[in-house]
Length: 307
Ligand code: G1P
Image 1: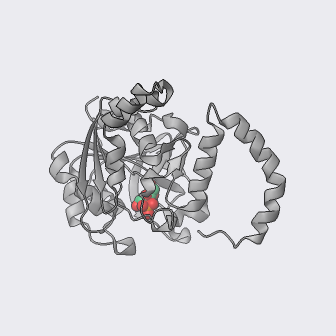
Image 2 (image 1 turned 45 degrees about the vertical axis):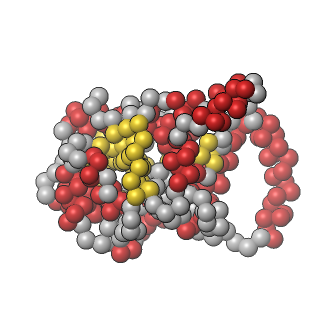
Image 3 (image 1 turned 90 degrees about the horizontal axis):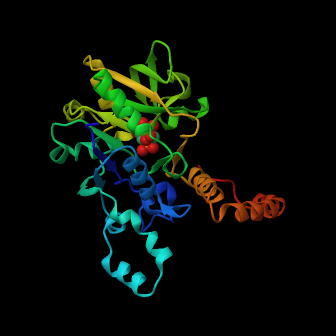
C-alpha cells in the first residue's frame, strides 16, 4: 500500500458544543475512555496510515500535547509502580509521525484541506475529519478499503458514504450515484447540504476521503458555497465536472459514523462506547437499567433538546 499520509482537519470552533468546547477542542472530548482524536488516530493507524497532518487552529494545543511523548509522566508512573496506567500510554509509542499546521482563517473545510498542500505536495492522501469516529473502538478498516479501491481503479476521489434518514440529508454532503449502488459505486455528482426535496439520494458523505493531489487545484478554484464557506464537497464536484473519476464506498453495518459535532450525537456516542467498555460496560448497563424508569420523569421537566 502506498498511501500512508492522512490530513486531519481539527480547526472547527465547535460552537454547537458550547460551553463544553469554550476552552477545549471538541476533538479532545472523551468518548468512552479516549478523546475523539485518539479514536481517529487509532482507526487510521489500523488502516496503514503512518503520517498524520493535523490542520489546527486557535485553542487546539491540547491535541498536540496528547500525542507527544510525556517522559515526565512515564517516569512518574514507572517510579510509583503503576504499570496498568503506564500501559494506557502505549499509544504514544506507536510508529507514527505527527505534523501540525494552522488554518489561520476560518474559511471552511475545503480551505482547511488546502492548508495541507505545502506539506502533502504531489502525492495522493487521505482526509479524515477529526470530529467523526467510525465504528466502535477503531474496528473499521474503511480507509484501507478506500485506499485499495483508489489505487486499483485509478480514481481521483474516493469518498465514504453512509445512508441517513431522508429528513437528515440537509446536514451532509449527498451523492448522486451513477448506475447501481453497491458497496462501491460511481459518483455522478455531489451536493453539499441540499434541501430535503432536492437531495439526489440519502447517501451522506461520512467524513473519510482519499484524494489525488488534483483536489488542491480544484480547491484553489472553489468559490464560497454553503454557509459562505469554501466547501470540500464543491471541490470534489469540480473534479467530477472536469472528467475526474469519483467513487463512493459504503460503510458496513458495524462501521457507523459517530459525529461529535453536536450534543445529541456526542451523548449517543459516549453512551455507546461506555456501554461497550470491556471492564465498565456490564455494570454500567445494569446501572442504566435502574436509572431509566426514573429519568423519564426528570427529562420531561427539562427544556426541549437543542439541535
Ligand atoms: C462536513 C462536510 C459534509 C459531510 C460531513 C460529515 O460537514 O462538509 O459534506 O457530510 O462533514 O462527514 P460538517 O459536519 O463539517 O458541517
